[in-house]
Image 1 (cartoon, rainbow, N blue to C red):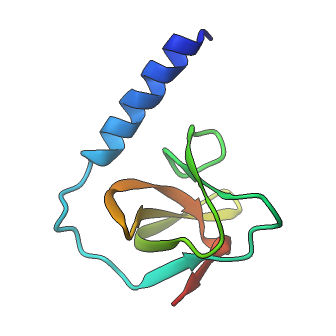
Image 2: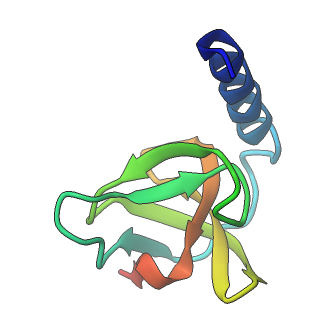
Length: 100
């Protein structure tokens, strides 16, 4: 896949995620990214599974709001938004979240 096509697809997916839900959606408690190894980051994805595009990497300590969770295969995936950028939403593995 060409670089320009990849960038266009990623931009389209990000736009769909940002506009998918109204800002007034009910939020649960705050969680932080926890347990990511060394210099690695938790991958925020466009959907609930490893087959979805990675939107961005989140280091330990990143504060998130959990909107909903679902079981996909052996992993519980949660739809989250960044506390400091609530319009940015994606999915992360529940295993790396710790309630604050």
